[in-house]
Image (spheres, helix red, strand yellow):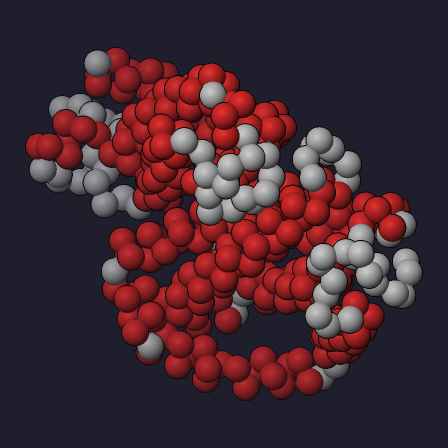
Length: 189
Length: 201
């Protein structure tokens, strides 16, 4: 599996567009800035919904109506984040795909997606009972707390990707090499 | 815009709208005058010792020697910036007529509380980050642009936007409300963008 991911990354790395983005100071920085600034639209709005469910913010705003209305701008934000995130991966494919933090981030993204699906399902099933309560029922509060915690860790992992502490280029413990997917004898980093 | 506050509103500001707005306008004018005077250069030179001192503080020591702590604080800065931006977009979006089924007063007041908390964390984590690289950022023009836009943002949010939305919003000229909402989004976007650009400098 790690060899397969490495081969795909090397293939990306050999494409002209990948090199063009990576070597363009302005284009790469614009993409990265868009990725970070879209946090305000995606994560910011998601956290508002989560905090409303936990009773920490906007207690007088009807909870499910808030979640429904903010769903579209939040999803637009996440689409922009995924597109720019893919472009950042595409621009630096080998190092990114073998980053310990990137891999943890991807796993947590899947967990958050499942959590969001379950949260939405539970919310639509129980709308009438608590719409105007300052706090959501415990199952939804749990989902909101998981969302807050995991998305915070995702941002931390995203930030840590920039650091080379656990890069395959350097000698690493076996556990780190296994999680990061370092390939024996690899020539591209 | 009526100079009198609606007596029916439950959110009448304790401090009159016009004095607060006047303070903000005078502060912005002074800021502008300062920017174009020779005083700016003298102040900048005088601030160097302060920035050198920042690097010698505990924050500066941790920021310089422990990369993990610096990165964690950066992440907290980003998360709080995201929440601040979310509160701004939600509240200003409502003022612009989006999410119209949500009660405007509850949205604006609730989002403002989130905004203030997020701003406090943004500033707190920002101070920590500056301490780690104080002398470096001292010489970066974009850092000063960021400080300038942050000052404008805080003045605008607390002394222009807040007094306006504390009124009965339906009684305020809708064009002014929309203008303030657009200005608010643009200001905070600029604060975030200049902050991001510090990392590239």
